[in-house]
Image (cartoon, rainbow, N blue to C red; front, side, top):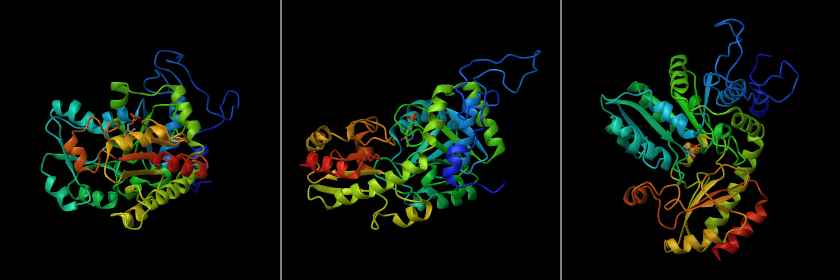
Length: 383
Ligand SMILES: *Cc1c(COP(=O)(O)O)cnc(C)c1O
């Protein structure tokens, strides 16, 4: 059968064959560092596990399939994948990046790569004119995150791809928040899509892992060379955990979306809540773009409290019982976080407030528990 199977079927089967030696239906955890050779250089395609591991390869193929990509590569974390992408660049090169980027990406770009001579320009990508103004002969890459973290801005991937192609730039999209179930950036014109598989792909808050995909053979070759040379590869156990998590991605995402919608609507109607950020609202500034490039709107929601009191936000975050106060997102369990003091603490106050990360902003990763319990928990916590 050559016709491409549907998403849920690929999530369960892509890249995975029954184990040839036993018929085990699940890809084994190949916990090995090296492979025996018949004679020097003569092997079964595997020589040393930094380069290749069968459990990792199954995962790479599965994620690539879900992103409609030709190639996939996995890393020991989302940051490891991002690190490899930036290492495609050279001193003097410039990157244009979304202005309310994930805090860890912002930190790596500014604290690790700027000292090596790479310049990052952070722009509001709602405004394509501002983005075009930032392009100069040194620009090599556009780095997009959408929906953004934590105020759920939606960036138009197709519009970014048009600009990238016009200026011969690489377009990279961090697809962590949407997951490949809701959005496939390569189909919209991106050259590389990157993931923190720690979040929705793994889905159970039990593993740190990263991935990237591309359709370009040369880019894949260069990125695989960087991965093997620099060594931020995931172990087989971690690869197995994400492979296992992926099998329910489509089912989990459907429930995240249903619960997310109910929570967003509940918060919006609450008298103590000021703004609610969720791309599914028809008056969200880029709702039309979200509708065009995403299948549904996800379970990530942020909101501010009337009066913008940090103390009240802290108190609420410590009163929730079903929502656990923790960093991260995308797991089956619901989480609540205070971006200004947690995920975005490394971003200067002025920069973060410009991006909407106010003192009372709270971020929810709405899990797949029964929604009745989630709403009751928020009700008692807001007071
Ligand atoms: C968590 C996250 C990352 C980093 O991934 P790790 O697996 O924690 O290294 C990158 N981008 C986004 C949007 C994230 O949420």
